[in-house]
Image (cartoon, rainbow, N blue to C red):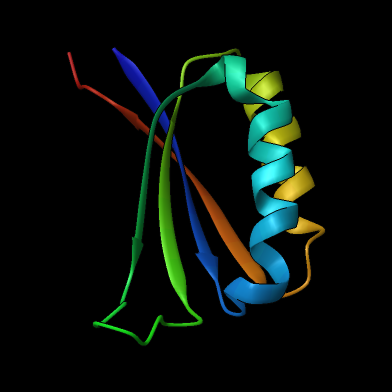
Length: 86
């Protein structure tokens, strides 16, 4: 079994989040799980956010999504591939 996950760190949510959302929507059919975390406290939202995206598509499709995220200013992403040892 193999799992591909993309970790996305957004440093300026108010400027970058819309672009990230557009890309995730474009590739929505290959996204199995999406978890978004930010440090919002009461009336003050954090400008930083972390997203964890589990992929269900092919390696090629996952790489395309990853490359699209890499082009967004203020966004750092890393693709992680995990495979169980036999």
